[in-house]
Image (tube, rainbow, N blue to C red; front, side):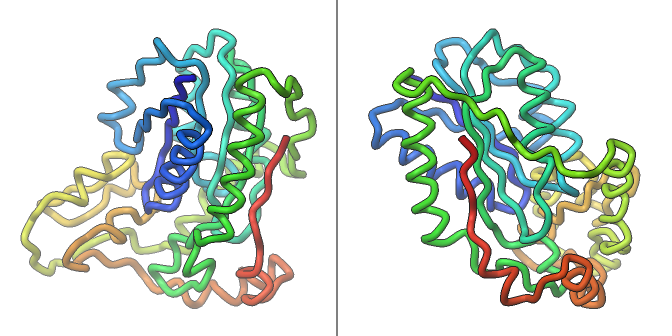
Length: 273
């Protein structure tokens, strides 16, 4: 069986899970191809689906949904009734309706969604002072990934013909979800910047930017296109890029979610079958 794993990963969580999931599929006897579509260039190039028997889509949760640029990209694909599964990485807070909303896009494009899963991963706002899943993914996620792959492989191969019918839709309207996306820019009020400091101008920040927002020469992210994923901040080899402190929003975020730091960080992932 030939399986394509297509993933978007600005800060490495989803990439890490894509690789371990791929290894588990290979243990099952599948031939796996990993496709990183994080950058605009990779998405523009597209993915050759010919020769694929099944696909897996890996995405982070941004404001309760897959990132908008990925929702738009997924809506350009042609599934041709191909079976697919999904997995998401999340930073500790609300996940739904990411599974449901993404599945609806894929089903509309002709894919047959057979399973989904969610895996904890360090929150990108930890770069500004949060403490959400600072050491995740870890062994718990790798063990869950093994169970996920076994279930998905059985569905891809036809041993199990069931599909998920109750992916949680959440309780928010489309208008509310769209509004939630803007809140990222209240917590990250100062987008990635060198603040005028010098660096070696290696260009990595611009090269890996998922939205094409970062200009490595000026060291400033375009506020019109930046999605506040902070991938550039995480990847900068010199630590030259900075954002505002997010520490002031950490405790209010926990209180709003009616949880504690310990409870939040003890969460485990989940499989949806």
